[in-house]
Amino acid sequence: MRRRAEHLLTVAVVAGFLAAAVAVSLLIDSASRRGIDALEASVQTEVDSLARSMASRIGLQQAGVGGALLGFDFEVEVGSERDRETLEELEELLGPALPAGAYLVDLDGTVTDGIFIDEDLVGRPAPVDGIVEAMRRPSFEIGVGQVLPVGEGLTTAQPAQVQVLPVLSGPVGQGGRPIGALVSEVPVHPESDLNQEIRALHRGETGRYHLADEAGTVLAATDPGAVAGPLPEPVAGRGPGLHRSGGQIVVVSALEDLGWTIALTQDVDEFEEPLARPLQLVGTVLVLVLLAGGMVLSMVLIRRLRAARREQARLAEIGAAQQELISIVSHELRTPVAGVLGFLETSLDHWEAMDDEQRRSAVRRAAANARRLQAMARDVLDTQALETGEVVAVTRPVDLVAEVRDAVAAQQEVDRDRTFELDVRDEALWVQADADRVRQVLANLLDNARKNSPAVSPVRIAVRAVDGQVEVAVSDEGPGVPPEARDRVFEKFVRGRSETVTGTGLGLYISRRLVEAHGGRIWIADGGEGTTFCFSLPRTPVPAGDQTS
Image (cartoon, rainbow, N blue to C red; front, top):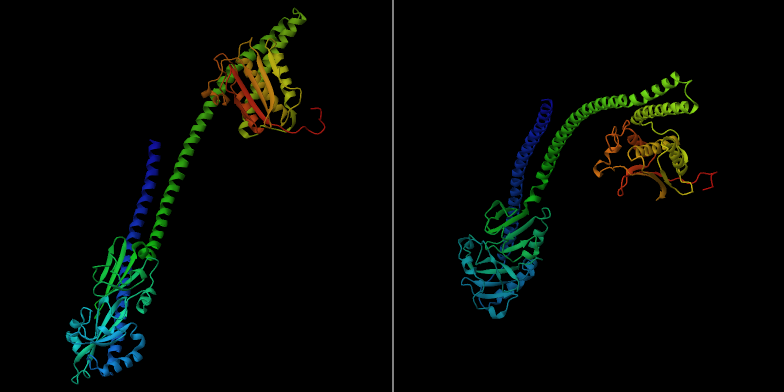
């Protein structure tokens, strides 16, 4: 029930933070949408203002050229000397306003004369469509010119924008009427003044402007390659206003009185970036902060709950270990205590009747049981020291070969019938260690091998230097340890490989902790019959003053 409540609390905290994150995300999305709407209106206004400005300026330029014609007297007749002289004066006066050329046509559309035209065209109908229709418009009667769609010109090999300007017989309002027209051609190409003006307009990296005539031919564009071609697909056929197409924003505005359009195209991502990206960034940060806060708080709760459960488990484990230790120690104490008391009481009761050999035997057996008691007490005390980290006292150079020889000799005293086979070289192998702790490890491993193998089988001990380490191997011919249990034998209270083995089950655990405290490692080797326990310690140079090795 308690664990279920803990899970519910964690889920409730996470759900609360998720709800807050969703609410923040919705608010940011709404603010972003309103901001984008305002940005779209602003860009539409910007393009409309640009269209009005260009229409006014181009209209004034046309009016200026048309006004200049009022000061010239044309006859608009083939072979007219006055027309020739007037055209030369006009060429000198207008100059840049006539970048390609110009020619006169009468009301029937016949070319009468011109500047920069082939003389063979004089007296023939103008090859440009729409000139006659332009001259028949009512606005032409009052001196208003007309710009025709881009087509092939007479005075330039490039596509040209054709302007039809009225030639009047006199001032408007004083009986002046159209007697013909002056047709001027402005080449449409990337280096024109109009295109340079459009190319100067920038909007981000993907913003593109296109200025087109009423037929949809591009007069000027940010991309020089689009000039004189058709409007690109996202813009073609679009009416004034803002449109979204194929991941792009398309803003179209009309140049009134000219029939032209100007359009801006830009990638949606870049278009919305100045507003949407900061909002999205803020929203993302807030959502991530909320989620991170929720995750951190949840992790803190989970870790605290897990820590509480681990502490409970640890306390339960400590309790179980204490009970197990009490059980093991109380069981193991009975035999040696009984042995000590039995042999001592027997000696006291029959001392006079016993000969010297019987007395020595009784005392020796009592001492052996006392040593067992001492070993048990040492294991318990060492386990407590290991838990507090106080395992190694003072280290000094220790000859591990000599320590192994002494440990084997001590075990031989305990078990005189056992064969101990020692495989060592005569040279000393030095390690930096606490000598008492090294002896304790060796005694534990030898005692373990002796207890877990048949009485008639030998125990083999080998010492060798391997890759900067001094390695000790203790082998027996006992039942062996399965691979899956090799780590477990170094844990507390694991006793032997058979049910008949006695002891506290702390020897190998203490040995592992002592070896690791010296910077070494202990393990069970693979292969062979029985079991081979190995441990290694870092080798140290021969100490000064001992150069016999």
